[in-house]
Length: 247
Image (tube, rainbow, N blue to C red; front, side, top):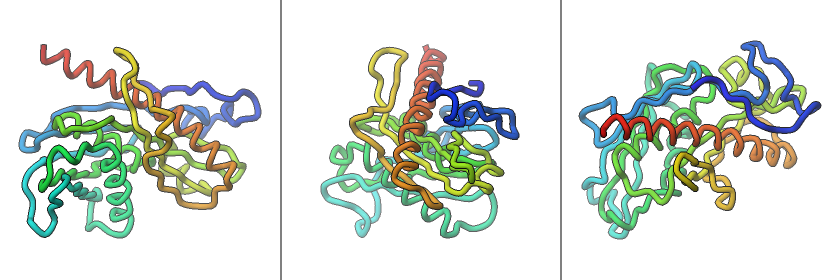
């Protein structure tokens, strides 16, 4: 899927700004989703967004160690692996965000005393990595047929020193930004071919770095929701294409 321009405010919003990579402030990078690339996982997906690529593998629901199990619900385990080297504090923070997001949609009561494990392997990184990982996790959970109340999608935004919000920033834009925020939203299909984040449920999970005023955060949520809706439409189209190939 090619870069997507979001509908949004007119002149003065920063939307008309052209970035160094040629995109406007409200334009997403191209997205690709490969479902089921791994044979030894219960479900898997490779999500590409611009230069960021994450491979997700899902195992479970399956039995887990008694010290970890919950007698009333399935537990969620997330493993976030960097492209190279050992996992550090950044990966631990990413794991916590993905875990909160998955727990927000998983119908955990159906599989007590089990664990759902999501392993996220970074293959390449060029900005928006957490959003890319969240989308990969969602696609892999669907591929594994894990019971979910809804799927989820995510978007990353960066606030420039001029106060402009950039959708789906690359690594250089994140590095230069005053603040960066990644937001995850629940998604559901309202009609065939139409998947949109549900506004009533608000934000499933949020991780931000840098100063954001209340006004900046609310603007980021609105723009992030619009971006996530576009991602959700792509995810639905990707799933329909995958299913049609099986027929």
